[in-house]
Length: 323
Picture (tube, one colour):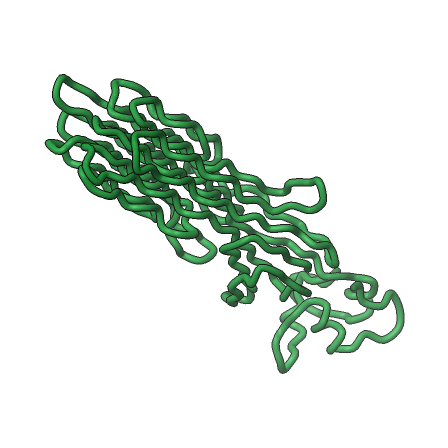
């Protein structure tokens, strides 16, 4: 609610509208309302009729994809799309513009789920998008990770999935979200899947002796957490499965691959060699909002922390926020 357009303005009203700590110091309100960035502040002239502008920085990571499963090697799942207004965004692109939220308006938060891995020969499942929406308008939406291939090309997504144990190509990533998956490799006696793409690096290619490593992820400037690494590729017994980082799952041979870590958007590891091989599930996504004032209300039980004068809301499941 805006401050009065005339008459007296109390310090308590100023603090309610713009935030701040006790005891109140006018220096906290430089560049707020119509106040200058330094020098003298006049309560009436600088704050009559003004209101807090909800500029929100964000990190939105979609759900990562599951890895593929195939005896001759399968690809790792691609990481979920990674978009942020602070630091480096996905595919090592520049930060996007901050959001301006309207006070009293409810914004719906959707956190994407990770794609399923497989216990029998099949492609993994793609991850699903995460978003911030108001009404019919999608403010931020990211692609889910591309599935890890069986004996096929990897799926397209925020980051592309790795190709299965064939001489094929990894899936394509999305601009400003993530990189491509790695290519697969096959020869007369062995096969190795490519690694899933990550937010900061392409998935590794399968070779005659190794499956591809998952592409690297990014560490958020908002909360210093590494996320959105691709899943490692799976391979036959004679080869070495692919590794992973930043929430991605490692590949495997003749055993279960590792799943992507929850709320990182990491891709699941691919599996090969048969036996008890099971590919990894993709990690679920996350939505993080950083604002300069405490929200009026939230749903979905986000984790709330403070840092550097900001309030940070971390949604690990669906919910809403009302400035």
